Amino acid sequence: MEDIFKTAAESQKDVFEEMTEDKPKRSFSGNKKENYWEKTDIEPMGIDVTKFNRSGKAFAVYVHPENDLPAEAVANITKVVKALVGNGYTFRYTGSSKSMLHNQLCQLEGASVDYYLPWKGFNKAINNPKLSNPTGYKIAMGIHGKYMKLPPTVRAIIAKDVNAILGEEATDPVDFVVAWTSCGTEVIGKGVDYKTLGPVSFVLDLSKKASIPVLNVGNKGFVDKFKELIS
Image 1 (spheres, rainbow, N blue to C red):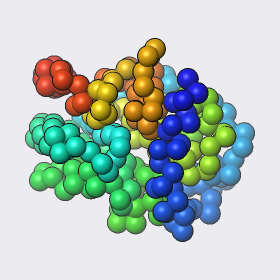
Image 2: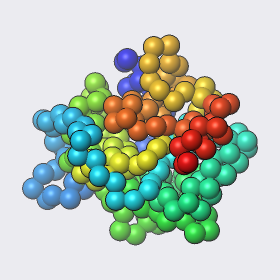
Image 3: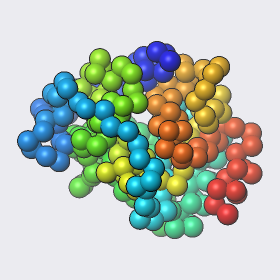
Image 4: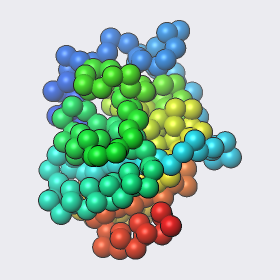
């Protein structure tokens, strides 16, 4: 399982380096008394699915590689998201200013978007985003075996993904995750190619533990599964 953690960090290295000047000086945990940016003794927290109480229909999108997708993948994701928007689903945006696909999707006509960021400077174009909080950090700590060995930037981004997928306090999860990877993997397990999955590997692991379906449009059977998910 070590590859899942190593690959997730390495695959986003360029993004972190490009945004060095925008790194926060402290954690934006929502609680000034708890600086999770510098905290070294984060207490792991499990996922309690019995507390799930969805406030509405929602989904998140994760792809790898983020800005080098085949045209067919972009087209298929866009079709799926348009259908979801048309059916009243809210898009939980998790991208940076350089996330071309995410930025295109949130501009779709009629799209309702909730913005989740690891820190404000991650995407300065977004006003009033929901930022990585202690719940995100604690659940990430409970899942990610190498969490405290990662740089603060990576930890904040992973915590942001937890918040986006499970809700700010891990009680309001998305209905499902829309993904694309060339391998089409939807469930973490034996024989999975973690290098191909990149940071999506953590998202799949989190989704599995939270019993959240994943729709990977890199999978040939994604159309039939999509129909089942929204039926």
